[in-house]
Length: 238
Image 1 (spheres, helix red, strand yellow):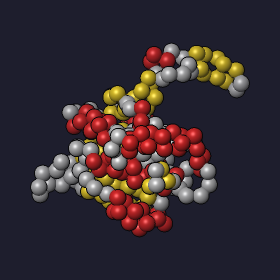
Image 2 (tube, rainbow, N blue to C red):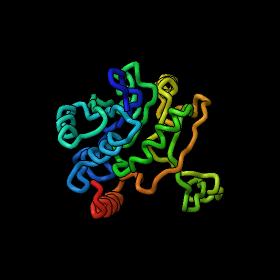
Image 3 (tube, helix red, strand yellow):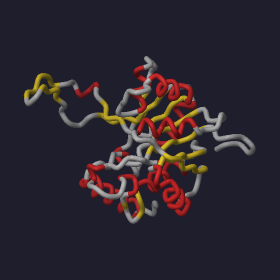
Image 4 (cartoon, rainbow, N blue to C red):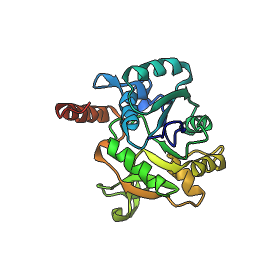
């Protein structure tokens, strides 16, 4: 944790301004309930409890900043917390959060609110790898399914899955690297921040991912998340 009188060294950004329509219309995805609390609460809780995270910054829907700030204050413990207005896209939200960080921040994690059950140990593993000198670090799991490349409705190639990995969050970055990647990508979109770093030609390292860090995108994922949370609580973990 940060030494007394020093500014935060490691910040975790949660872009949570999206609507998440694949889970159905209505409440933004990050605010959908999981075990009686919004997914965002669970995601922020894991980040804030990590040993190496000093600050969590949530980029919320602009019209709901006060609501989100109040919500998180009621559930929060651990690292310091800030809530800022997010942007129209995920990248816009990350940029806005980055722009407001204090100069003392050297390491930045970016985490999807839709991965509410990422273990604290995973958060620390990513942060530690960046602190040890990596430009960028992503958690990765082997791909279990056979993956084929298609054109239209025809298979044209079966890919070697031994060389493929499913990438999760939190993803970690040296702050200067992430800022440079976002600046270079102005006007271009990517599915994650690591892809922006790859475009700079920088090395992206991997650490072992976690099965519980899966992304809640569809209603079936929400049911699985409820089951995992119930199992955790039966073992005494909030």
